Image: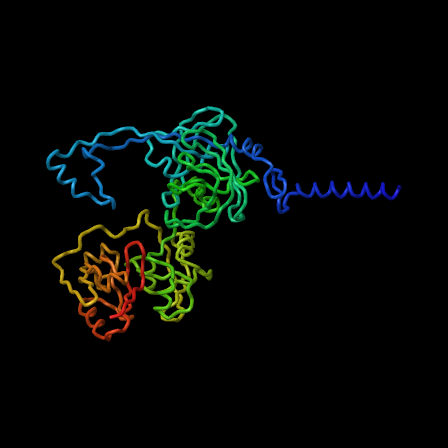
Length: 483
């Protein structure tokens, strides 16, 4: 009987120790807020503690409208000016644009007891008036400290004599897919709405800008959540809710707080973000480009264009170089290179290593400040009086004038422009499009229609023609077809 008593006591002790272990910080299932197994027991304490530092943001901006009597006809499906507009204006005339006030809602969160608040740039951009409403109902006028359109981050500030609550910034790099998070915000004007979900993915690139690195979550995010915090189970901000997929359910995106940290510091100190600039147009090394250039390595950033007079040009970097390292750190992709260069200080001399014709070369490049906006191809109509040629593949090309080269962001004397592709032709079937610039044919540089024709004549019937082209919004690509 005595032995049974000791066994029972031992069993109880072991049971107590086991339960206690679940609450030990740092364990696989432990956090500041207790859990049972792999599931949170509840989000109530987390929401109560974080909620007061989340704010509603109301903005008012002046918008011009009414310039065209029938605005639904003002732009065509592609966003270009609609030819019908000229017809309507001919009969009805151009209407005077009138101004009206547009109100919008967003979210934000306090990060400093002095009143600094983080939100999205698109929430406060061009706002004439910004109002911040706390959870306790108090309302304040806010001013913009600084904005960064490239990452959609803004820092605003309110002045208050009250003791303001503030959220702690966490480490988004430590986030794991499947980890629980909550979002707090102002969806559709429903203030301090709390939603919960998990981290669905990390490092999402959704073509929102040059620094895409989004956290994807299935915590419900809706219009009005923009600028609000994504919070982990330790009550730390790990992301800034910013975007949803239109028509999608359970697909939302947040800016990683680690990406935002340095930007917020710069905005607080100087009101702007200064990034490094190399002066090149780059893209990833795709399978077809690797095969075309005969290289095994499919990592790095391929230089599609070098902008004249910019740092890379002055250092000697050329188109078709593959940038593989910056200051000794390996470059994995074009996006990786963009991030590495952005972090460099203006005036710094960076060591850039490239792969050129299979050989490594090193350059010292003096970094410039990244311009606020980068020029893109215009929607210009290419000169129809230029010399044009068509060949058997159904591709009509034109020589590129210096003015056109400038508009296309390419070096003078490079390439020929595709001005039309015959429907059903070999060129169309292979994927050649109007507006493509042909730089090479079978690795032979093309700088005129004469060079274009000569390169094609050297390809026999039934042999492969490999076009190296540059396409708007897509960079360099290789298109192959049989002659």
